[in-house]
Image 1 (cartoon, rainbow, N blue to C red):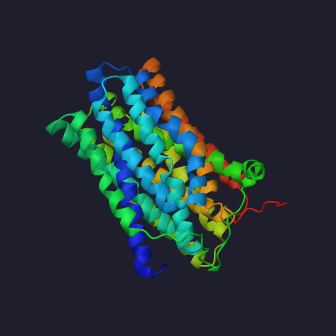
Image 2: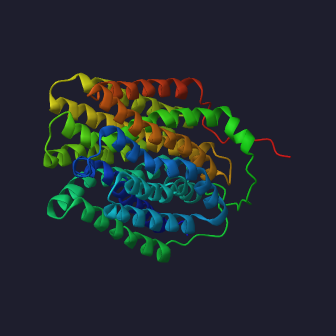
Image 3: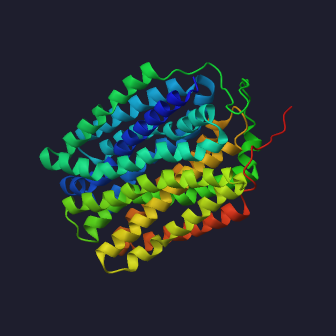
Length: 409
């Protein structure tokens, strides 16, 4: 089951689900300028609508990861993909902010499973020395999806309407669910790749897990990185239109560029981290070193609001999102390596839950900053400061990268 051919196909399947998730997750941000005008929505209200996705996404990340540990990855991921695809399509039939928020909450329910479950799949099928590369490759699918969304949605909106754009992309996502159901074969028990020893299900020591220094460091780092990530995902297309004066067509091109760059950079960063391990560096140095470098690069977001040339701003944004994508891949790699046997989905789900809180706050805070100040400057600077906090967290709070040890009765 763990043959090279099988695992390559598995990476392709995970890449494709990330690509599809990227389109369904970011489609609202691209359509927002048109929807705001047609439905008479102000930036503050739009920010709340953006955050609705994260209300359910935040609540269900941890249960989704825990369900994958108990019921298996195949079933949980397949049901989740069906839910978010149908909910994304439903966005196209909504006629007010409340209906839009309900549809986005449905997308959040489904997509809450994707990161913890796919990380568990990697932990069950790949050695530790391969995981950063594998996670970098398949998570790059999301970045390619984000890059494709402005062009795809822009085309569908121009040819049909924003409503049909959501219906077409949402229903089209269901094809992956059919393929996954018939192709992926999952053993009934988890297998540790390094030892090939079947591990029994374990009881989750919740109090120890949620108060562990390593876990708390992961939580804070993920929150800071995800704040930037979700601000990008929800507001950058509108930023390019509202503050930089780009047309919908130009916005589609320049909003795609940062994510297209991230699609290339993310697997390279994962490969670099694994290469460092193979060259004799410790796992801690290899993972933390790449993570800190990415965070420092991404913190340059603070400069975007203070440059006059729109193309210089686009260049800085491209650097930011490429580095920010590297942060995400490395965080899931670290989570897979510090999780005790049988707890990968739970640890990853816990971390992603805290990161998703940033998804609630970032769109809302950004929307109201823009509403009351008339500019994105303060919002961009705040996200950069959070990344500097994340650097300190990685260096001084997160301990050596190795499986956490909990006391058992």
